[in-house]
Length: 162
Image 1 (cartoon, rainbow, N blue to C red):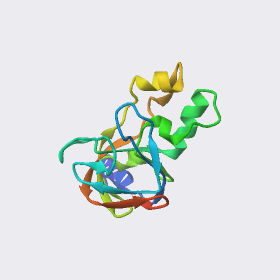
Image 2 (image 1 turned 120 degrees about the vertical axis):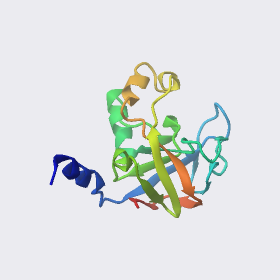
Image 3 (image 1 turned 180 degrees about the vertical axis):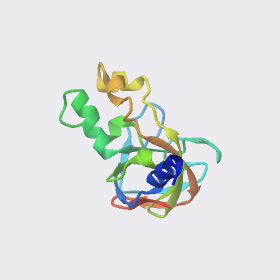
Image 4 (image 1 turned 90 degrees about the horizontal axis):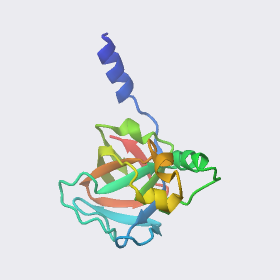
């Protein structure tokens, strides 16, 4: 077995199942995130009620961040915790390394998403989190995804690779 095929086997081995720990939408530009217990998700539109106004080919229809990274960001800022809505991501996932989803489709509740890239922090994080907020989020900003199949998501739903 070549080194390349061994690496591919490692990249393709993802038996862990995560779960949805938080769901949020941005009702309008500049407004605070609104936490939800569940949401309908549609291709080209993302989460119902979110301000995202893209198109079906948009790569940033849904944003996800790992719950475990929220603690890392808080720690870098010498805080115990930071509320999930501050990060302005749609879904907080626990128990699954989101970066391992690169190049893959995955199910969240009854929704099928496709990994499209990293969700880098914006300059707003410096204002929102305070000095050093932008740098605290670097490498921890989560991922972006495109909606492949519509459906519903709810708190506690499984998140797993297809």
